[in-house]
Image (tube, rainbow, N blue to C red; front, side, top):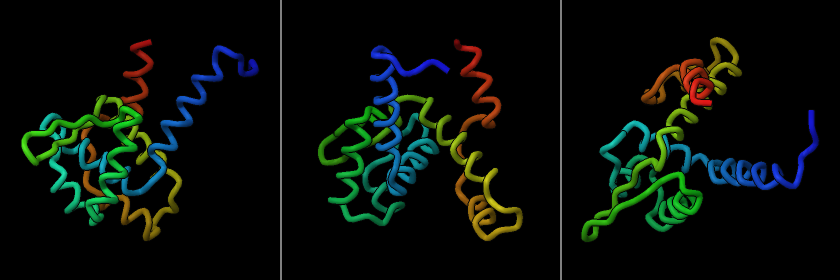
Length: 136
């Protein structure tokens, strides 16, 4: 395997920064809510309700997601709505959930809990990977 070059180093750094952005349970929960909302998006009030966060905490998490260009927002008066910035984020969540579930022990409490999570829209992880490969 070739060593990282000056050309690829920034790409690895960008990818690492993306994963750092995703490295918090509340942010993953927000992204799953937004994925389920699809084109309708979700108001901040819904995100507060689902996450149980204080408004200031949620605001900080949303700022991290915005800076990483994972979500976009729109303000109308006092109401702010959020959307996934790119449909690929929803696909990433599907693959991540499949990866998580594949590693859980059959019959475990965690696997039962994972199966009770709200469904994510989108295809199976294999279909997602096939679709991405077809784009290349």
